[in-house]
Image (cartoon, each protein chain N blue to C red):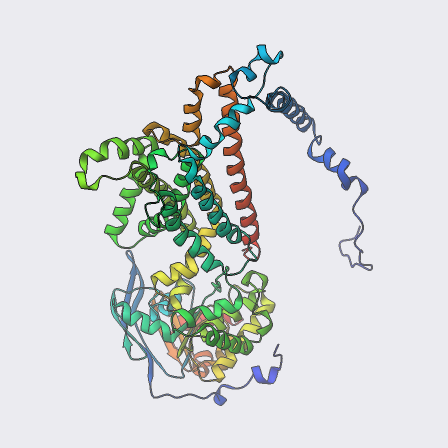
Length: 377
Length: 263
């Protein structure tokens, strides 16, 4: 070959080799591409079989579907090994969902859910217009409506004490309040932590580090049992409200750190361009910096929200009965005491927690993909 | 695209100037980054209609000087008066000046989450208080002027570097500024895109815009500058008419710099 070269004919694009296309090729490459890969595939298959098969047996094949008491779920009665005792769940379902909320008032909870879904669904579907109005309704108006619907005492609705609230209702109320409260607090704290005003910054740093340094269980305990000692009698808050405030401040501190991560990722040029155009601090933050920063931290925020959703189970420690608390309370019912009651209950709760968490995480993934179009840096 | 070379090569004497009002006045400006003295006794008076091109070795304080004019940077000593308003700690004076001074950055700094049109309309709406409709009309007008009206609905990431920089120019113009600052507007561009941005700037110059440009594009400088400034080590070394500056530089550093940049 000589040292100089001039191409005389241009190379036209060719089709890719056969071995590169189709399902067999994909399997070959992704699952059995190398010795290590093959070993990992086989081990995974074994673990999968070992976990999934017993689960299916327990929940479907060996499960008892009909019955009215513990007797129907005993191995002696059925005459074979017994899996899940679904009649137990059916019998306690209202409790798991609503706690001891008066049965004739349960429609108020369902109405609240319905309003929530009607407002949330269009908010989650990107092409639906009027997003700003929708967001105001969902984040601003809905909590107020939900509050009065659930508590009552107005418009002829009987008052329902939060003491009798329970089950999934309490789980959702705490999670929803936590999310709605934590986001604005988190944003304000994150901005404050990056403020050039020294005292504002110090306050935010101390606040964040305090709440991050304390376990949620301590926060709940303190809010419920200690706070009443320090506050005057007139300031006595509803026990659920005390817990909500504790959860909101706790989640807010974590949210602040998530948002701060997003703020730090915004290049200095964005701030400079906004300021050069004459935008003041709040407008710069609202229209230029935060939209980009919050978009960047969606995975982190969702992570926090899912963690919060699951952390609500800790309210059990202060005698508030969320889904899991209600479940455990129902285990004490002698009418349903069987060897499988506990497992059945946890399987049920696990499915609900998983379904909700998984849905949130999948939706967040979808949003993230959608938002990333057009912003590839 | 405007590729008419005769237009781009129009000689400087055709350019309208109104040389009786002071646009920018810097007096004895000193600035330190920590202990590092970045701006040293900077004195510069820019008249309305002036087009100042600032050049000099990197790290010489050119960008810093430019960024003091809309107080993106603060200084510790001296006075800067822009369009009759003295820039002070007072946020009011800063806001007032920023409304009248447009800036174009080396890295474009478009807002990636907004479309081209939204980028342009943002400040007119939220700073000038225009209605969205008015602001978008103005945005369309200036996008037309920088010759990319068809890109209005796109996001910045979908545009080439040259197009992005022209959008950045349009965005600044939408505030209808009296003074435009350009901080190395072509340094981050691929070579084939430099011309489209420079052409836009030349047209702006023809319209009599007061401009301060940090640039090493000496062809552009020769064509539009009313005065050249050479900065080095935080100081203004030489200020002169471009004819004199390029053919007969007086200071040793100017000579050395020009001999390196004009091969």
